[in-house]
Image 1 (cartoon, helix red, strand yellow):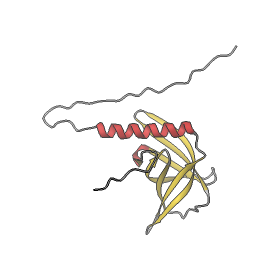
Image 2 (tube, one colour):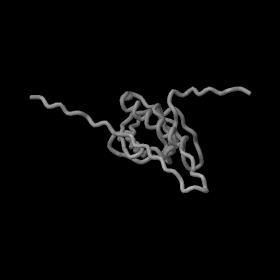
Image 3 (cartoon, one colour):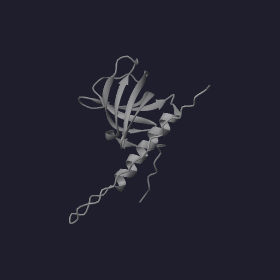
Image 4 (spheres, rainbow, N blue to C red):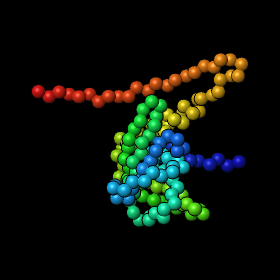
Length: 145
C-alpha cells in the first residue's frame, strides 16, 4: 500500500469557517460559494465565466469561536472545472499580507483541532460541555507627549 504525501503548504477547511465576497475591480462585489479555503488560496463555485488572466480581490470574514476577523486578499485563478450550470475555480493568493496569512492559517488550524476533539456525550449521562475561550489581543496605544 502506497502512502500519499500532502503537497500543500497549508491545511484546508470547509466553507463553514468564513463568508467571502469577490471583486475584479474593488467596486462591484459578489458573494461566492466556497468549497474549501486555506491560507494559500481557496476553491469556489460561480455561475459566471471568470477570466483566468485577471486578478481578483477577496474580502474574507472569518469566524473563530467568539471572534470575527475581516481579511483582504488578492488572488489569481489557477484552475477551472466546468460543470453543467456552474464552474468550480481554484484561486491562489498573491501579494499576500503575511500577518493576514498567518492569522487565517491559525484560525483554520484551530477549527480543525476543535472539530477533531469534539465528541458526542455518552447517551446515559447528562453530558459534559467544553468551551474554548481564546482571548483577543488588544493593541496597546502609546501616548506620546
